[in-house]
Length: 313
Image (cartoon, rainbow, N blue to C red; front, top):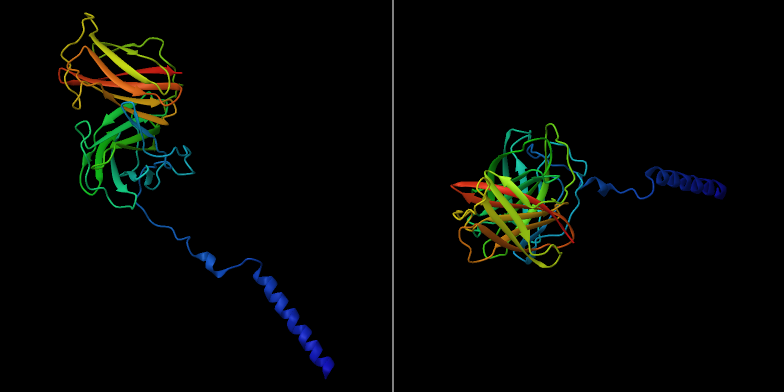
């Protein structure tokens, strides 16, 4: 009898061991939660968050830390993506696939750190939002102004000249706050133009729309205040143009980007300027490297844009 009971106990132990081995180490029934996806509208891809610095004049207004430029495996027409600054986030989305040389409707939704839509904005340079668009080698530049609808929502229709990656900079001022710039990458379908490395210009004289523009800098040292002077002349007569018209409430408008697009400088003109032929702006380059400078001015009712590339030590 005792021997029979001992054999039964050994059998039970063997069955228990086999059941434990089948379940496997570390198995938990809770692992199935948290893997449910969500359906979203079909929009053009905006790459992972990539925030940049915003500088007003020579003061530094950093809106967020630098992020990763990678696509993180996204398809060319994927879901809406967001980019965030210190306290604000912008969702960039398109109403469908973005194709080169075709109109695309872009929506930008601005929310605060708690995810609430930002309702009120201060006017900056006569606009509630400035949107700067550049391509990877900074050969393409566009400065447009989305329309404000409500609840932090802006819309604008634009066009990308060829396929490839573009970076969008949303420049705005939440009411009562400092200037913010939130940026991110997107991609357009179509033939991709050959990209060229950005090289500093040997001559800082350029001709555009019948104007000859010469740029001089008080210095090209990083972390030092620099005065940028644009001397605007008639290309044919070489006479200074003295009847420039205000553009965005000032003698002109200047945007500067570092070669890697990590540093975005929104530059203010010096006070007390009127109608040319010289237009002066002040800034500070945050580090050494090559920078692209775009100056925008208005004459006879038309806005013209001139660009230069300079090397900063």
